[in-house]
Image 1 (cartoon, rainbow, N blue to C red):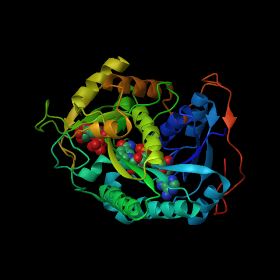
Image 2 (cartoon, rainbow, N blue to C red; image 1 turned 120 degrees about the horizontal axis):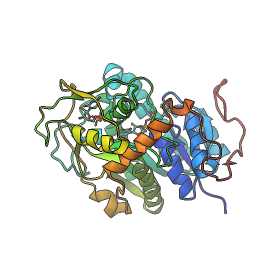
Image 3 (spheres, rainbow, N blue to C red; image 1 turned 135 degrees about the vertical axis):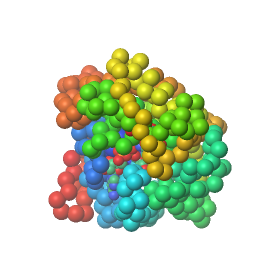
Image 4 (cartoon, rainbow, N blue to C red; image 1 turned 30 degrees about the vertical axis):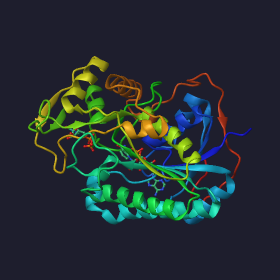
Length: 369
Ligand code: NAD
Ligand code: UDP
């Protein structure tokens, strides 16, 4: 029997590429739709090094109805994991219209195309940002929407659209996964996060300081009412997050309706605790200095992670030490990200490419790799 194909929008990105690994390990074949605006097609070659299967890449935009129709016509897609989107909070404040366009209009175009194709199983990448910055922790899924920036509002709006859709049409099965702070890398050291330019987020910044690529970490505030004065977040291993998509997909396939689920560990860690864990994992000292608070930062929040366990049997299995060890393995082996050559036949697995279709993009100049 052929493996079911899953359309993974944004599948070349950080979480998407790890999700492809988890899907393949679970017996699915990912078909990736991505503009590569914030990613690198070579991430999918690394997926192949790890799994022996290179996902098909369709270079196309999730807002492009014609491209979507062609994907659904060319591949016998069983379900969709929708990760494509823009995710920088500061950029969303400066350019909100682009965020509503890609994140909200992109999802509308996608669900319309899914409906035309009769594919009504969807896992959506949402975010803990839908809760805003004033909910008491641990934050359960029942907490109200209170996003404080355009990025978070796009995620809350998409969730509301999907909830209305599931209420209106019982044929849909949808899971919205609210990620807390995904970090880490695949344990092979072959796949990880490679931000364009200086990292905004804590973990890639620490990794680059450890590697000598940046001078020192600036800690954004050490006067919060937390264990050591620095900000506290619920960091969750990206492979745990990736595997959460597989569990949620199975749930959505069995159960019509919509489910919102936090993906977090249920534990918070401060900036200084992450730094210490990274020093242990890497054997390097992380130079740091205390700077002012970052505007808009919440002092501390973490997930109530019980909902995903109760609904579809997922919980995070990897701890902060493993997140740091895997980030460091990736950083140390790939100081230039995907520009560093992957070891040939890294996994020893035969490579298989699911190349059953020719070009299906609607716009000239887009290639089908
Ligand atoms: P990423 O930028 O690495 O991945 C997003 C992918 O979407 C990229 O490959 C990008 O090229 C692609 N993309 C962007 N616009 C597109 C479009 N119009 N059409 C097709 N592809 C497009 O980011 P990520 O960290 O992997 O995040 C994936 C998803 O998870 C996003 O929706 C993000 O909002 C959400 N999320 C991420 C985090 C996090 O901390 N990384 C937290 C919560 C939610
Ligand atoms: N942080 C920091 N220095 C950095 C980047 C982040 O001190 O260079 C802190 C930030 O203030 C927050 C935590 O690390 O308390 C996590 O920040 P990140 O941007 O990774 O996640 P988010 O704030 O979006 O949850």
